[in-house]
Image 1 (cartoon, helix red, strand yellow):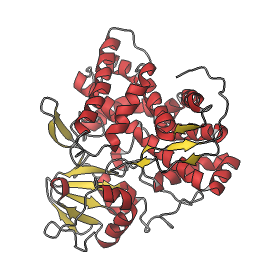
Image 2 (cartoon, one colour):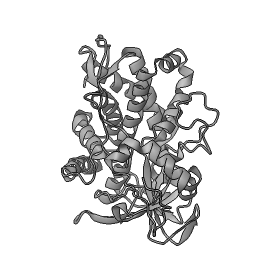
Image 3 (cartoon, rainbow, N blue to C red):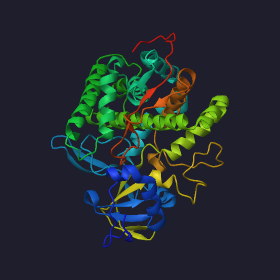
Image 4 (tube, helix red, strand yellow):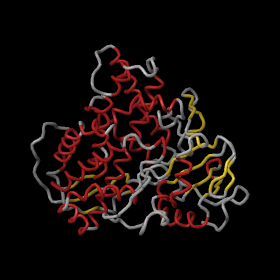
Length: 420
């Protein structure tokens, strides 16, 4: 990285989607945070990069100045704004890619479905899904940790939340995973997006089917029968809500859990401590969220001229809020690059900040706990085959693993009410 100041007249050479950034992001973010916590890069049409904790929080908590709104024309695949750089050619997510007052209505409409009490109603099912998935591989003594376990569990829980047929879990999980790890400039990216289109087509089909049935469990049935502000949702709003819930809830939890399990495999003393003291798991979970922040960064759009961290921002500028850099800011976190289970204060930003803080945080925490418990109980020791493992080629959106083959001592299936 060069030694420039990071103004529009003197920009930095940086691309959050680049493969070399995926290999060196902790060092690059550390240097940026120390040298220019607000820096301009020309990549992807130009955007500001915010890497200090204070700058990130300031903008995340000011939706009147820093907009999340997205426009999208499905006929042409074009649009503007939103929370991704570069622009992602899929329907916007609701409520995450909206501003007040639209945000207030849509967030309020679904809030109670994501409250901690509601999430607890899914815990036993998450446990069953995790057990059934391990039954598929336990006798072999090997599996792909990502594609056989940490990916499918969140996908199946999300399908149940939505009211989608669980029998389609494989077709559901794979394209969502591929869309995240495939760089947007890759030749196969459009075909990957087409696979995701199938997921949303199924959401549309099931939504229309539910309209002709009495209301049932599942969000698609809820969307079909319950009004928002006295009117029924249109199909575009249904798909936008589905987009936010599905994409926000699946691969993020996959990335977090994979990183945590890989860390524990390489730190047996830490793993032994958690297995001996289960009460420490929630604290460890929050520390894994901070150090291995699943969603590295999300964008905002400047609505009027302003100033942040000494830099003048203009109306129409795009800004990238780098949660991963903020979560390692030494001004806030002692020993920021270390995993510290007994950290006294952990005000991490892994779920964001402000009104757009992740609505699915309770689901992510619950699914992480259940996957960790199943692995501790049934596959406490495993060896990662790093020669065949692949990290995401880009960590511009989510920092995770494409694939992680592991080997372990073969075991026996357990009694389970479900076979997948």
